[in-house]
Image 1 (spheres, rainbow, N blue to C red):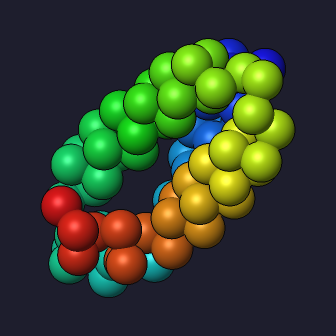
Image 2 (tube, helix red, strand yellow):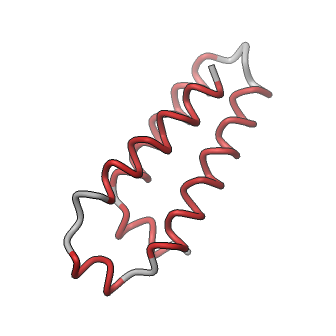
Length: 79
């Protein structure tokens, strides 16, 4: 489960950044954003592995990660 969630998060993130304008890339350091997204996906994967029996925690983690990865400018503010 954790591997699929991590893979899906990374895939959605990279699909999303391909749709962004060139202005976005001039404003934000895409290398830092990508590094953070991949690292966060790994942390989420570890959290899911440690909480395999707690389905509510898994759903909350997935939803939070999807929300964060779908709004890159907001995520960039937290770097």
